[in-house]
Amino acid sequence: MTEGMTEFGRFAEPTLYILVSLSEGPKHGYAIMTDVEAISGAPLGPGTLYGALARMEKRGLIEALEPVDRRRPYRITGLGATTLAAQLQGLAGFTRLGLDRLRGASR
Amino acid sequence: MNRLVGLYPRAWQARYGEELQDLVTLRSLGLRGSIDLILGAVDAHRHPELVDVTAPLPTGAEPVSRKRYADLLVARRLGTASWLGAVAWIFAWTVAAQGPMVGTGDDAYRDGSAAMPLYFGALILLAAGLVGQMIRLPARARVARLGALIGVFAAPIWGLGPWLIVFAAVLFAGLLLLALGAWWSSEWSGRVATAVVGSTLIGIGLAVASLLIGFRGPLGQGLLVAYVSILTVNWLAVGSSLQQLPAVDDDVPAGDDAIVETAAA
Image (cartoon, rainbow over all chains, first blue to last red; front, side, top):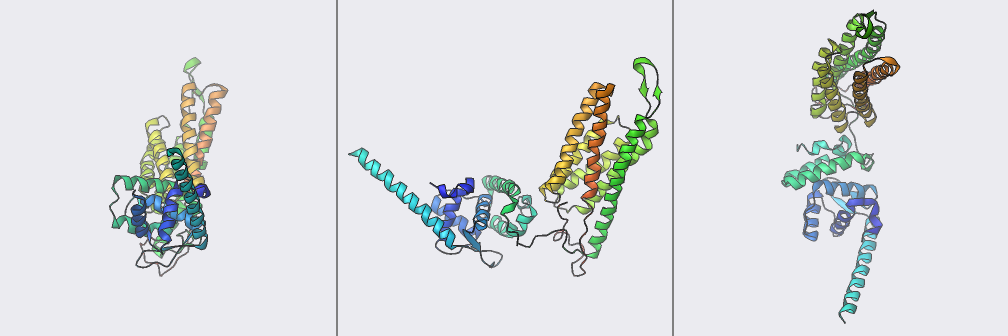
């Protein structure tokens, strides 16, 4: 599901959620955390969030903006958007395949 | 400051500490969040390369106040004393090994009492180095400072006689706490901490083996020599981690050691 992000290890899934969250605009840590929790329906711990953010920043998927009131917003980069698009297309293909097989089995 | 954020390496704290702090202030962590933060700190220690090297990191090269500099200078001298302690330690055991044989047959033993002043001096000088560590280590490095404090008391007492092995055990425990705590708080490099932890653990193993064999024969003597040699690393490591001095800046407020601390040795 997240083959392109195997180097992220256990941070691969949170990374995908964070990229989706940032795709609508820059957000700071707390806003990312609450948004990801709303999207995924599962809590995102601060250690996991910043472990993922550090990896994403290091690999150029996101960039940090100037802090506003102690809060530093993050913005998705071009590489991050491309990576997210590839991941989502892979997921869409996987979804189509699964649905097709389900329909085939029910006939 | 949330204490768990303090578990992160200093470089991480410099880059992400304020954000993390803001996050944990906005929302109660709970048990699950606390465990997640601890695991995050472990991961951060395992992957220091993830932090942006252009971020302004506090290092030993950063200027300190004159008062702090004077304190670090004292710590450095105590570190040099610890190095002298390493010499005294080796000399003490060398002198003890040359002592006259007393008694006959199975009851015969080597009288090493002539080495006692050197032996005591070596451990006093190690305690001096540990006092230097307490001066240099920041308040947040609590575990490391506790380890140094334990060593400050245990070392001189063990110096009263090598047979006081309970105090040797306490000293070794203190050294392990110092090394692990200083490494965890990024005050010591992994190399220095590994040297102290490794030499202490190997030293304990060699001491136990020597006690079981009874210091007799070539094997017992060899184990004793290895024990003395490897423990010398502790004096050297404690001393070397106190040698680096930062520059002085009169604009840095005195007593502000929360901002400028020591570099990884």
